[in-house]
Amino acid sequence: MQILETVKDPEVPVLSVVELGIVRDVTVAADGAVEVAITPTYSGCPAMHAIEADITTALHAAGHPTVRIRTVFNPAWTTEWIGEAAREKLRAYGIAAPGHLRRGEDDLIPLLRGRTAEAVACPYCGAKETDLKSEFGTTACKSIRFCNDCRQPFEQFKAI
Image (tube, rainbow, N blue to C red):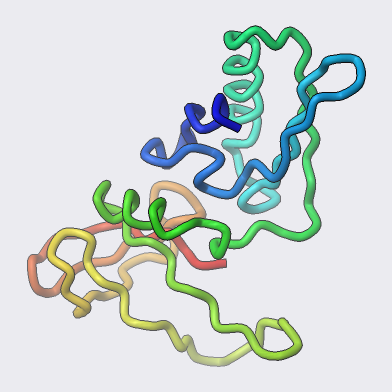
């Protein structure tokens, strides 16, 4: 895990793949291979091939010649796996961290006609008077917002 803490997410380079919650488990098999279980942030994430290659490269460089990557889809990745320290790193980098999900007793996500989003604080000035400008930012996992106080555009990591 210490080695994987150095592997940065290619789309959000301020966070490691461990901090982002992509790395689920690391074990050493009987044959000495390092096995890494990862969960993509979403099933179509284009960065997963790069992440797998970066994990393999980092482990090879640390002296582990055999690396096996296993993709785990269940349970599905959630932004709740991003810890508070990583959320602060996102803010300092200029990306609003995802809000915390409010789930019901049955853990189902209700389908609604209107959005009921919590206020998103600007990562630059902290103001909560921000507007959603686009559901999709530089990547599908981020949206574009605008701060009405400091007039700065910024990305927000979507909560899923």
